[in-house]
Image (cartoon, rainbow, N blue to C red; front, side, top):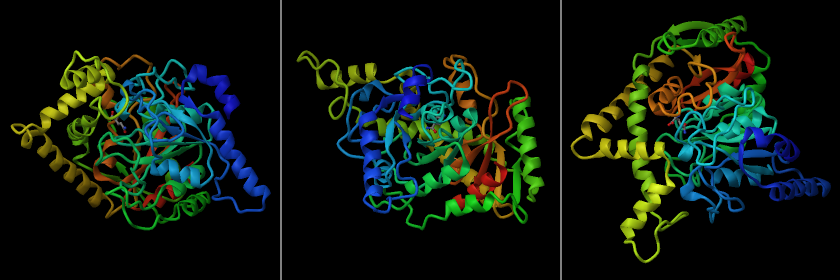
Length: 454
Ligand code: GLN
C-alpha cells in the first residue's frame, strides 16, 4: 500500500501525511507477535488503514484540513486511534478533508482538493473525500471517516465504496476534533460490506471520556453481514422514502436506485412506500444547527492554545493577535458558518432560528420513529447526482449544500445509515450509492441488508 500511495497519490491527493515508518513498525509488531505464537489482537491485525485527519494522533500532525492547525502534533491519541492501534491496524497516514469537516467536495481543504479516482477532474465527495479516494484508488483497504451530515456516506457513494454512519454515541468522539458535537460521529469505510462490518466492530464501544457515549452492547455486525451474504431477505420490510426522490435527482441516479429496489425485492424483501413529511426541512434545520455548534466549538482556536499565531510581535494586543490569526488561519466556508451560527444564537434571533431548527429536528426524529413502526429499514439514493466536476459549486454554497439532501435526516435523528454501491449511472458511467437507513442501535440491519444487496 505504501508503494501504491507513492505511485498514485501525486494525482489523487488522498493523503495529507503518510507515516511510512510508523506503519511498518506497527506491522512488524503484529508479525513478531504471530512469530512468537501469540494470538493477534484482532481479526484485522496487520491490515493497514487510512485515518481522516480529524482524529488526534501522537505520532503525526493533525490539521483537520485547516491552516490554523498546520503542523500541530497532538499530545494524545483519539479513542478511535487508540482502538485501531490496540487492534493491530497499522495507520498508513492521515487523509485529506474539507476544513473542519465543512463541505461536500473536499475542495474546502486548505491543502488543495482530493481528486476522484474514477475521474480525476471530479470531486471525491466531502468532507471525507481523502478516505474514500484512498479506498477507491487501492491506496488503503480500510479507512475511517466522520459523518456529521453525510461525510462518510456521500464520498462512499461517489467513489463506489461502502461507508457507514453509526448510531450517534456508539463510537467515541474523544479526540475527534469537533465540528458540530450533537451530530459528529466516526464511521468505518471499506470496499465491501463485510470489511466495513469488521472495522466497525473494532471502533465501536462505550467510552466514559465522551459524555454522549452510549453504554449498550455493540451488535454482532460481522455476523449480520455474513447472514446477509446468503441473499435471503424474506420477512424484511423495506420502505422507499417518497420525499427523497423527484426534482433535482439525475436520471442515471433514479434508474440505479430503482434497479437496487428491484434487486432487494428479488431477494425476498417486501417493498413499501413510506412518507417522511419533514425530511425536506432537514437541510434548513441542519444548516442552522450545525453553524450554531460550529460558532461555539471553534472559539477555542484563539491563537493562544494551539497551532498558528499571527501578529505576536509586541505591537499587537491579544485581541488583535486572535483576530489576525483567525483571519489568516480559517477559510471562507468556516468563517461563513461561524457568522451564521453566531447570528442564529444571538439573543434576539435564538427562538426564531436555532430554537425553531431544534423543533424541526424533533419532527424529523418522529418521522423516523413512525416509519420504523412499519418497516425494518428505509432506502433512498445517497446523493441526488453523481460526482460533479471540481470547481463547479465551489463558489455557490447553497448548490453545494443541496448535495447533502439525502444524508442529513439520519444525523439530525441520531440514527444509523450505510451507503453501498449500486449500479453505475447510465447517464455518465459514474458511481451511485444506495442509502440504507435503520433505527438507533440497529446498525446490524444495515450490514444484513447491505451484504444481501451487494
Ligand atoms: N456536507 C455537510 C457539511 O458541509 C456534511 C459534513 C460532514 O458530514 N462532516 O456540513
